[in-house]
Image (tube, rainbow, N blue to C red; front, side, top):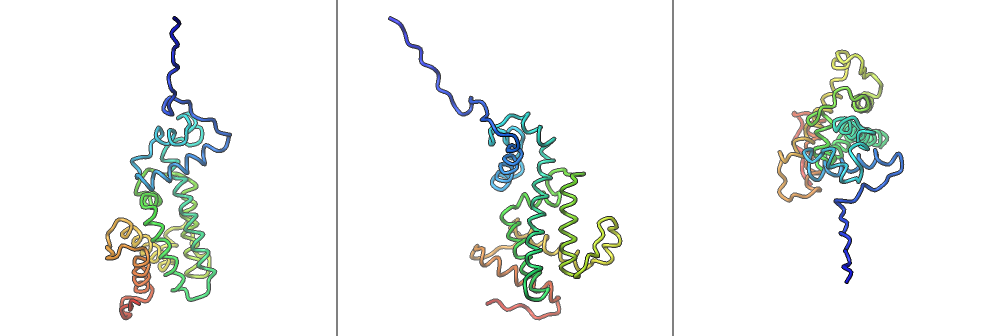
Length: 223
């Protein structure tokens, strides 16, 4: 009697990575990294884990990014560019400068809540991205857009920070207030009884109105 030998079942773990067309790997690695960063935090981002998620080898990763930190720099740059888009959008709307700042701040806070660790990466609180040119450029351009929104001109000088500090006080104040508020709320530093996004957004609006009107103004009245 001839014994039939069964072929062992293949598993996803033992399968070779699926092939990719040239040019897809970098984009897929970024998408997987952002998903992991939002769902599991920075600690989940390793070359091995990302390659397993995407279905490529570590060699494929290093063909596109020299390190995890470099990939984080690209993610942070993209995030800053998203902030630039919303600043530009609000700059074109009708209404006062104060109304534009309030509306933009609400969106930045919501971004921080949805992408807590990515938000921290944007400001170098996680990961070492020193010398990442795209990230540095995106940060400078975002600040320049904020200055333009507030002052109506292009006075920001990224190559002369001392001058910019002296002549762009309002923009720096708005930046630190907005990003600081987003950071505090994203980390649960301010509690909301209902826990709804609507309540959070309304409270942020009220807080920002206090900022733009000054502490001497009357308390905002909730609807």
